[in-house]
Amino acid sequence: MRNIKLTLAYDGTDFRGWQIQPAQSTIQGVLTDVVEKLTQCRLLVQGAGRTDAGVHAIGQVANFKTQSVMSVGEFQRAFNALLPSTIRVAAAEEAGPDFHARWSALAKTYHYRIFRQRVVPPFLWRYVQHDPSLLDFEAMAEAARAFEGEHDFTSFAASTGSEEDDRERAVCRTIYRSEMLRCASEGPLEAAEEWVYVVRGKSFLRYMVRKMVGTLVDVGRGKLKPSDIPDLFALRDRSKSGPTMPPHGLCLTEVEYPDSGNSLAEY
Image (tube, rainbow, N blue to C red):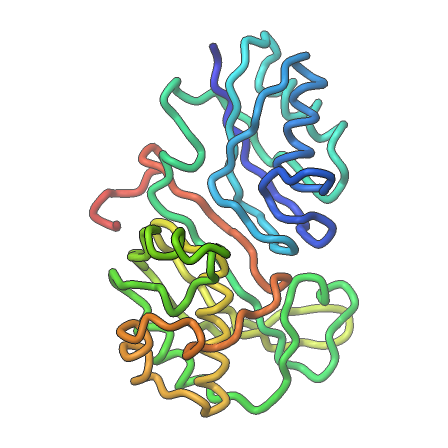
């Protein structure tokens, strides 16, 4: 049995997220349908991160196991010929038998883009959250750093929909990097400023990054202070943190594995 690893990029706008759902168009569902066409077997494609509806990726990783004799190059070409243009296989390779896109991952990095100019160019609006209002960047940057380390992220995660499941789920997560950056974006209309929140961690709870960004925006508006972040951890009350930001500003940019050249000392 061969284990095929795919590196994926997709525009999540028209999909109901990664995970297969009945009667819904999802990234995992579309990929699984293509694998079935290529191998004549119904093989579930496993992903590194279960991105929500509307969330994008340029570095998602997936894998599936097959007895097909197709080369990895043939798989890549066939996927890109059959997939919608909003999903691309950037790379395909053969992985070891124990590789699993999700369980083998050491870290994932997400970016959340906030566009700061008055007018959003039409080629960017799907991928940025537009907020030209007065915000305190320095306070947001200070608050972002407070997310680093191991914490109980109950205050920054959505409910599972079940009180029993909420009580039983593991809510401690380790964040290796949490940083707010100023970035210039060039385009045919004008040079524009974006603020990009970069977060790198072992794993994330549902809506966790989007709620962290909403909390940072509340800090920028003066509704919260950077020093409030430790208190929010202690409260374990999602109603006290900021709002869940819209999904379209969020992108999974990288997934790291033991064989990707990273030292374990970085984690």
